[in-house]
Length: 285
Image 1 (tube, rainbow, N blue to C red):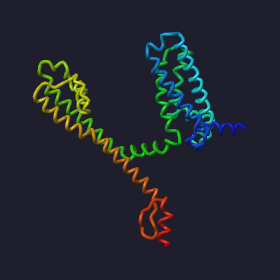
Image 2 (cartoon, rainbow, N blue to C red):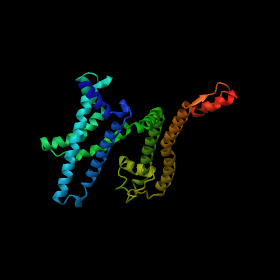
Image 3 (tube, rainbow, N blue to C red):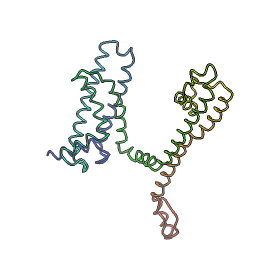
Image 4 (cartoon, rainbow, N blue to C red):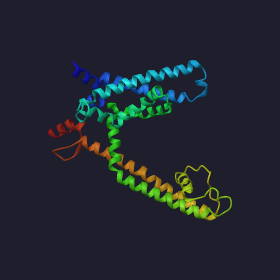
């Protein structure tokens, strides 16, 4: 009875591991909706007109209390049933390993500030914004698991290419900062803005990303000329990561399509698995 109850709880809280069942999805969707409502509540609490009245303050307080109770029960049940998985099999050390996992730490950080405030009196409620991180549980739903894995594979396969493009972008930012600093530091009126190369890095990032806040502007002819070159170069360099990621997704889509095809034993043509029977019947004729 004890083991069966634990297995049932584990399946209800982990549909991405156990399977895709109706009540599993209902419970996870309920938790996700509650997380979203908590995020909205944290945002609305910053609106002055929504917490002037005592009734409004009490509403947010009681909603927070009920939410933390639900999250706490959920966290305890997850820890209790975690040793059903092979990697957390030991009744003590396995649960401790699960509690140290990133997903469990996110769950704990979402409720811990509330208890610190209640027990110790230290107001860390602002840390409850960490509930935003819990929204990543959306990827635990079976419907999103395949897409999440594909994104992970793309970034993993393209890690070296993305790292190289990042290094090139950092090199360009440093080079642009040095060039503009020496061009703009001496003229009167600009020396208080381009005070150092580290301070000029802000200008380089804003310029290369084509944001252009206008708080730091080159005045000299040399500075403006170099800025034109830097901006045009920046467009090309900052487009590199987007191109690499796009190429990675196209490759993943192509590989998935190949997996769904079958090579005809008669003519060697790659055909969709759905059309396999029709293709073979045509050859039989």
